[in-house]
Every structure is written in C-alpha cells, then in structure tokens.
Picture 1 (tube, rainbow, N blue to C red):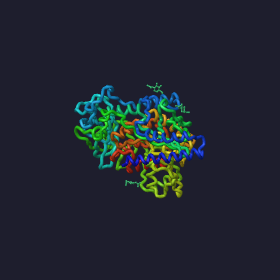
Picture 2 (picture 1 turned 60 degrees about the vertical axis):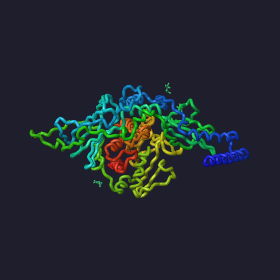
Picture 3 (picture 1 turned 45 degrees about the horizontal axis):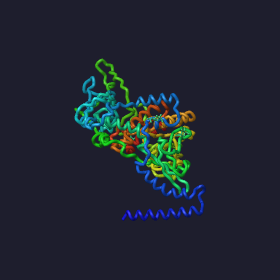
Picture 4 (picture 1 turned 135 degrees about the horizontal axis):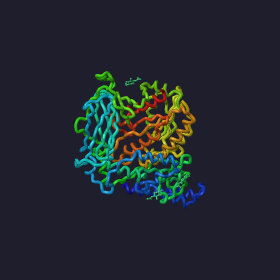
Length: 569
Ligand SMILES: *[C@@H]1O[C@H](CO)[C@@H](O)[C@H](O)[C@H]1NC(C)=O
Ligand SMILES: *[C@@H]1O[C@H](CO)[C@@H](O)[C@H](O)[C@H]1NC(C)=O
Ligand SMILES: *[C@@H]1O[C@H](CO)[C@@H](O)[C@H](O)[C@H]1NC(C)=O
C-alpha cells in the first residue's frame, strides 16, 4: 500500500518536474542555465538525499597532523606554547596497545577500593589540614591493575552543610591513585570516588580524537532561486575526494571547508548546520569499555569508612607552651567549594549574593553584556531574562536555541546579547550571515567600563585534536588583549567547561575526558590575564546535583552571582 503510494508520488513528482523544466526551457527566466542543467537537478536531488545516510559521508583520511595543522602558520612562540600545553595534558596510556582488549583485564570500579589515610596525628583532622585518600584499581577478575591512566573524580561533601569540594587526583601510574582534599568546614565529611572511564576507554577516546575528527559532521545548504544543494562541511576535509569550497576566515585564518556543490558555486552557501554523528566508529570489543552502570561514572567503594569528622582549625587551638601551632601549608588545586549551597571561591575573590531581581538590575544598570559561545552561556542569557521582569527579549526572529538573541531593559538602560561561536558549532541551522568568530566580534567592540564580555567555548571542540582548540583560544586571546589595550576597564568573564551526564553515545563524542583536557588548556591560556574565570568544572564536580551538560538552576545561580560580584565589586 505504502509502496504503491510512494511510487505514485514519485511519478507525480516526475510529471511536476518535467512540467517545470518545460516551462523554464521556454520562458528563459534564469540566466546562464540551460535545460540540461535543470534536468540534472532531478537526479542530483536524489543523490543528495542518499548522501545523508551516515555511510555516504566522505571519510577523513585518519591523519592527525592534517586537521591539527590547517590554517595560518603559527609563530615560533605559538609553537612553543602549544608544545607546553600539550605536554601539560599528557595522559598515561595503557601498555601493549596493539593487543586486543580483553574486558576482564580492564579497570572495574566495583572491584576497586579506596581508603582514607591517617594523618601524622592519627585519625584526627582539622580545618586547613589536607585529607589524603589512596585508591587502588582492580580489573574485573579482582586482580590489581599495574598501570595508570584511569579517569577518576574525587569529591568530599557533607549534605547537612550543603558543602562540597572537588579533590585533586594524582596518578601514581602503577594502579594506585591519591586523592587530596582541602578541609574547609567543621563537621562530618564524606569521600566520593568515581571512575569516569577506565584507562583502556581513555585510550579509545584519545584515538578517536586524533583520528576521527569527522565523527561529528556538518552540512551547508547552497541556494540560488529555486535551485538548492546540500553538501558536507568540516574543519578538515580530504581535498583529494572532491573539489572544496574554502571558507577559511580572512582575519583569523580559522579553517572551514565544504564540498563544492555540483551546480551552485561556493558563494551560494546560505547556512550551516550540524549534519550528524557517525556511527560504528568503535569495534564491538571497544564498546564493552563504555557501559553505563558498569564502567562509565561508577563509584569506587571504601575499604573501611568513607567519612571523617573535621575539627576546628589548629590555628585556633593554643598549645601548652602558649604558641599557636602553624598548619603545614598546602597547595590548593581547588578553586572554591560549596558551603550552605553557596559557592565560595578560594582565591580571595569576594562573592556577593544577588537574591533579589532588583539587586541584579541595579548591578547591570547602564551595562551592555555581550555573551558569545555555546549553549552553556546561552543558559545564562535565558536565566537572566527569566528572573529579571523588566529585561524583555527583543524579537529578532532568530531560530529557537540558535540566536542571535537580544534583551533590553530600557528603564535601566541594560542591553543583553547572545551570539553563538563560529564553526564547528553544532547548532541546528545558523544562517551563513550570522556565522561569526568570537575574536572578530570582540574586535568590533569599543569596550569600556559599561561593557561586559562573557565567553564560553568548549563543548563543540571535543571531536577535534586539541591543537584546533588551542588555535581558536589563541585568536580569542589576541582579540581580548587588543580590547584590554583600547579599553582596560572592560569586564571580561570566561566560563569554563563543566561535567555532563555520560552514556556510551555521549562519551564517544563529548566525554568529560575531552572536556577536562580542553579545560586545562583554557585555564593555562588565560592565566594571569585580567579576566574572571568561572570554574564551571569544579562548580559542577563539587555539587551534589547530577552532572548535566546544562547545569541545573542552583549551579547557574552561583555562576551568575560570581559574574555579578565581579561587575559590581
Ligand atoms: C598527514 O598530513 C600531513 C599534512 O597534510 C602530511 O604531511 C603527511 O604526510 C600525512 N601523513 C599520512 C600518513 O598521510
Ligand atoms: C584556503 O584559503 C586559505 C586562505 O586564503 C589558504 O591559506 C588555504 O591554503 C586554502 N586551503 C586550501 C586547501 O586551498
Ligand atoms: C540570599 O539567600 C540565601 C539563602 O536563602 C541567604 O542565606 C543569604 O543570606 C541571602 N543573601 C542576601 C544578600 O540576601
């Protein structure tokens, strides 16, 4: 029945097209096109349709250096910085990479254990001490692992105080790991260790990142009059397979390519969109390393207790000789912690709370807030227009979730804007005319004490070699430095990557392991600059709510409080 219907539909379409072709051939309305071209259109349309089944996507030549080294030649300093950054995120790989994976010999969080280590003073901890936890990883047979590379998360928390802090994990590269926590509140505290991925799974993720930047692909629609074609686009496309359209940005040299449409020319590109996710990119054996509830984000249990009781700081205790005992200084890798569900930065930054919308409005009065990036900063835009009754979204007729967006409070002279970052943005459909690179947008800002620039760029880069991200951040940093030179009072805020919910599918394209690596690079590249870095990673890692790509409102509130505290010190 349906087969017959579709047959009739095809016949009808054919008749309609023939009629159209006949009409066109006779009225000659379209310049430079002949009837041969138009009839080719019909065949082409069906070819284009079939080219969008994933297997029809031309494959990248699996050459790491090809994608990483496109674009402008970096300066010698850039090359040095890149090497330093790549060294700083080097990750231990399991040995014997060439032998096939045997699941039972890979890390199993259920067989693994952790133990709280006593201090020099025994089982007694004070605020300002450090808590050390030793973790030993085992495989599914229960045998201890003898090499490192597992991706572990550590958290110390206390539900009754609304408190939590992310720990620092050290890999001893022999199956043992240490987790270190600063002790920041008095009372009980509970250790939580989570294996995000086994070292064997990380090795797969790393290979995918270097060899399969095509695993998320993009597409563009080309159109002129009634003629339209869609082709595949990406940061790096193998040039030998088909002619390319080169959309490399003239200002930054950021590369971007699409396959040239068969009939239309490169100027006729009208939009950009996520094409899809390539399937079957790992073997069945490798798939066993990515099982929800088995080896993705599973807790490791304590061999004894997982709780301690923290006493007040020793500096408050006077010893028998009358002098105060100084605590040993510890280097804190923690950027902050939650207490009473409120984020408290540890770098001396003073957080204020903005509970009333009137306080927020007062803070943003006379400001232009420019937000650029992925959906994790669009979330801030949405949060602000939801809680500020006088901030009205101006209808730019932009596609939902894509933007650009704009909101105005004309009473208090507040302008809030959001625009997505340039390719490889994975949004549904962005008009070509709205595709802008953040660095070019920042170059267009006069800046000043009433200008706020907020950036978040990470989630759409996890499928590419890290060099691609470094290059993008370098361009953004150059533009921000130019902005600071011409308008030093401009407020610049950078939101880092956060943790997200993972299953097998999400892991292969967006694992937290990718985000962690990008985050380390981001922090290093903006270190020492006069910008506020909002550590979304630790803010999501230390919180009790489940990890989510778009963190829940209590976390967003803390981020917005930090943003506002910075603007209105
Ligand atoms: C990878 O690409 C680079 C740069 O395009 C090229 O020099 C190199 O020969 C390629 N390697 C392989 C194995 O194809
Ligand atoms: C694309 O254009 C840029 C800038 O004009 C150029 O440097 C690059 O070599 C071009 N790419 C290809 C594959 O021709
Ligand atoms: C904001 O609300 C929190 C939680 O209700 C409260 O603890 C805090 O004191 C409030 N801060 C201000 C400045 O009103």
